[in-house]
Image (cartoon, rainbow, N blue to C red; front, side):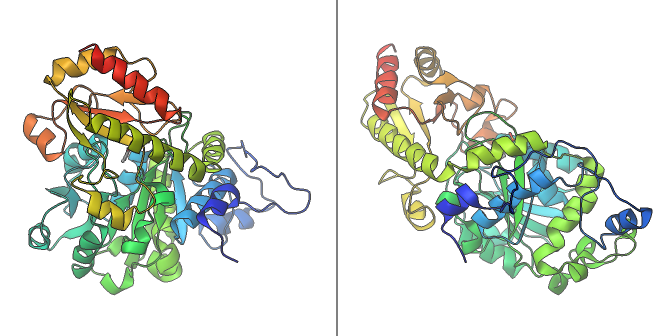
Length: 426
Ligand SMILES: *Cc1c(COP(=O)(O)O)cnc(C)c1O
């Protein structure tokens, strides 16, 4: 029996047996007991599945990962300690020193820095392309050693909408997977696998948790990418792993399981960015109401965007739900039920006016955060994107005067009244 997304949000991932806890149990244990060394040996060889050490896997995490996997329509998933860890693992699982990745230039500042600075030090090269580029421009970014393509469904904070089909087509014509960070849209509003993406990542810190309570991440595999058919490009998945007694992940676990099994067995084992079971439990509480909250975040986002669009002190508004927005057409295709609660805009008078305006907001707090039940705002050029020069800022779609407002779950009328009185102070 297959269920609607709303039902999966509430009940997916965990089905208790007779007399078992109704809510998912928090298995607050680092380790698990076995009767014989032989039993344990089989787990280490990946011959039997089971738990032995929480750095690799924990039942609480697996229940929650299974729910997100169902929501995205994937075949396997894992939780990570943060969204940063999820994106790092997703790339590093298939790209090594000497490899190359094509990425959208408007991705989240933290991810841009991870790719452009830290992973470059590891010998992985990135080419950043404008998400609105033509298929020819996209084509020109590929190299013989390209191993993946990466973008965000709705970019944070640029709010560009990714033409997922265009990027998937280009990736597949070069025999590499498309990885999509679906943090802002969530599977409630977009399922990138339905448009050709192969791997989806999340910062669960945002809407999935939704209450600003726990940092976390997730990686989901669609199970569609045929690693063995492109064996020469992905030796890590298609040749024996000496650190696991010669297992070839692509053969042993197939298209459906190879990516996540390798990512757990190698990267989680070696880097250890596991989510704590306690945080996974908190994340699941958020997921139980994700479908209800997303609807309200989108309603508030649209109401606020409409108010700002008509305000004389506002120079521009980015919100793909607004008719006339540059991304409205793409949003109607990929996000027909709504996008997210994040709106960005420019205040006339530039940086100085934006600062005055933000200082006078009473409900919207200044925070390095988005996608929370409480409305918050940020001036990216002086916070999350501070490390970028003007050229990089422009490529990232972040104007120096851009204000990012994350509409929470309060009454839209109160949010609008708050914005209105703060704009009056300029
Ligand atoms: C916040 C964010 C991240 C990073 O996630 P953390 O959980 O903060 O590590 C990655 N991608 C996007 C789109 C984000 O918004």
